[in-house]
Image 1 (cartoon, one colour):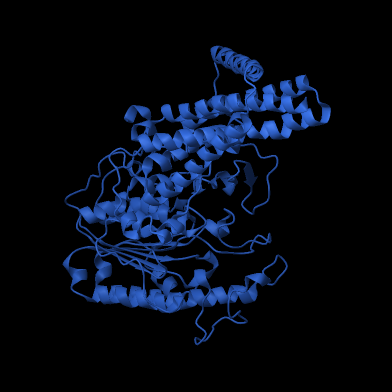
Image 2 (spheres, one colour):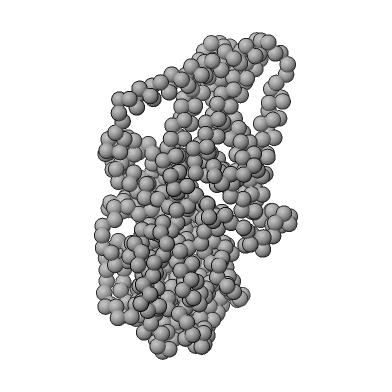
Length: 617
């Protein structure tokens, strides 16, 4: 008896899952992405939609229906609970489709806070007719699921053939096909598959790039030479063609970045050479990175937008407007990375079009590579090439990030660890030996940067160069006493606040304390260095560095885990699970904090402004 009840419930589960799968397919049909789909992409998406819907629908079947049947044996009770849960799931998926169409992400804590938060009535002004429509929608899905339950019972009575095993095998086959094909598509950069996968809520398909490369399914050269359909990629970036003042003098542009730069080392004791150069610069002391890790911070620095867009730009082959403009204006573009540009793959994502790109640097140790990039840059500016035409150079130092202080070099700050012993880190330990190791690394890099700035001055290049010195992101040493060390773990100022020095010929040295971000860097360099006249909003989320206009939000992180930094540096963080957590600037939870839903809604709309809408497609 119980076995028959479960079989009938399983048949209803299959039919209800099919309804959810149809809703998922409709997500794609209502999206601009549909224009990018090909046959293989549609085959993937349909297989993924069915298998993912089946996985989601399996939860109430296994956790509610089956236990009720096994414990009580009451089919009516189990059936009502099953129908109610699947009706709720269907309605939730329907509403999620509306949210995704508007915000380009699925229902999460951000959406719930907007709906229930302060000022929600200013965003969601629901007409009575809309409430009537929603009531009818609830009735529709309720009636549909009741009908599906009766249909399942009828089919079971008239067809006693085994269907459970064939159904399970079919779903497993669809699941395997969707994941394996996505793994191939991810490394082959197949847009129709990769971008359509984001339409499924909390769907995390398989990727196996290293394995695919190892097996020879595709080569690294194939990846770099992939044919991107950038003419129709779902992105509205840039919004308008770049305009340049033909009378503007083209300046050399130099970005010196320090991986994992803790602001407390920006002082005469630790970094005297940088401090000396700072006396000629504008210092922005309220500057925030675009992320708490290298991946998102360098992305934000060059693209001017959040790494929330990383996947979209990667699969579309869209490169930064900043780099494209440099190349169009015949700049000599040179990179000097201590750590490889192939992981994260900035070589492909940011510098794809740069001829003779230097993606790696020779050297047995981090310090040797830091020294090598310094020598290579100085050799370049000593050459005739640096005088032949304007140049852009990106120097990226890694020693403070690695803590790999050379053993044969005397330490200025003691007591100091010999290496970063992460097993010793805890909330109660004295941070001084670890902190001194970091300070020694920063001191060593400072001398290298000093060599760079001195040679720029000696060669007269500061007369026609814009120079930025900053960090990709911060580095925490348990400043908040919550056992956080390093970066990539929270969005407090210790992990996202970095110094920023800005030098341009004729600038007046001063300290500027208005909020600036990594999203401002590309726009400012394009304006001051190249002569671009566009509004920065055409191609970035930021403004010009010198624009003191108040900013009531700043986005950090990526598409899975991001946060808005709002008033008083309150952190509104969306976790990968979709939950929402709110902290003050020192990472203390704010249980009673009332989110300004209007500000949050405006931030989300702004965050998504570089996606094309259906009307633009």
